[in-house]
Image (cartoon, rainbow, N blue to C red; front, side, top):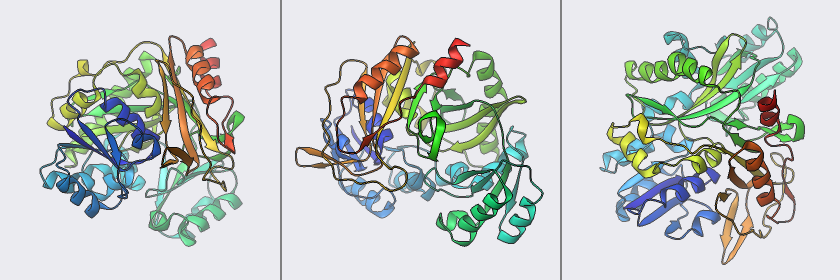
Length: 425
C-alpha cells in the first residue's frame, strides 16, 4: 500500500513509525513531513504545505495513494478528507463537518450545552466592548478563548480585569490569531487535575486509548509561557477506572451520539482535554486529531496494528478488542530550542544518540540538509521511552534526551514528577 500522511510534526513522525510496522505498507509519503520522517526507510517527504489542499489532491492523484491519514488540525478543518474521499481515496480523519469540534470552540461549547455534556460555564461574544463589559462582572481567574484554530495558544487564563481587557484587545481588535478571534468565549476557570484522552471512533463505537498527562508550560514547576507541550507521560495516574467509566457514560459516548444527531458523524481520533473537577470530569476542549506530544507516549504503548485500526475506523467496523496497549508506562521529553515559544534561533546541526528497544526519537522541528539534520523550529524533537513502571519510563526518556545535542538545546527537567507524586499519594 502507498500511504499518505498530511502534517509535519513529532506526532506525524510517531504515526509514520507505527504504520511502518505493517508489512502491507510499501511506501509512506509525508506532506510536508520533516527531517526525521525523511530519514525513515520507505518514507519520503515532499514540500507540499498541509494547508495546500489543491497540492495535496494533485499529489495523491499522481502518486497512486491507497490510503491517507490526515493528522494535522488545519487540513482537517479545511476539508482535506472530503477532497480526498471525492477522489476515491479512503482517509483516516473526520470530514470538515465533523472537524468543526476543533475548528470552532463556540460550536463545540454549544454542542456540549445542547446535549448536556459536562463543561465549564461560558458566554460567547462577537463584540469586544460587550465582552469587556461582561468581564467587569467576572470572578478571577477566568479563561478567554479564541473561537478558531490558534496553534494551541488560543486559550488564555487571566487573573485580573486589566489582564482580561488586554487579552480581548489582542484577540478581537489586534487580531493576533487572525479571523480565529472574530468570536471569543469567556469561560469559568476550572480546577483539578488535567487529563488527555485520545480515542478512536468509527461513528458508532468509541475506544479510548491510554490516558496521558501533558506539561504545557515552558519552564520547570509549570512556570513560564504556554507551549504546544514540553513533555508527556502515560498513563495519567488521576485517570482511574472509576473516572474512565464516568467519562465514557457522560462524555465520550454522548459526544459521538451528539455529532451523529447533528449530521456530523465523526470517524477518526477525538482528543478529549478533560479537567477532573470536584464536581466530576468536565471537557476543557475537543481536538479532531491525535495530540502532540500525547501521541509520542500513546503509540509506543500500542500493541495493536495502527493501520488495521485506521482501516476499521474508516470502514465503520471498529471493535474494542482491536485496540490493545501493553502494561507499563511511557514518557516523552521535548528537546526544544532555548527561548521557545518566544524568540529562538534555528539552523543548528543535531547529533542523535542510538536508540534501543523501547526508545524512540520523534523529530518535529528539524529539516534534512544532505546527511545532516538541522533545527528548524521551537520543539525540535521528543525523546520517548517505555518502561514497566513510570519511574523507569521517565529515567529512560531523560537518558535518551541527554544524548541529543545541538546548540541552544533546552528541556524541562521535571517531566513526570507530578504524576509520580500522584501515584505515591
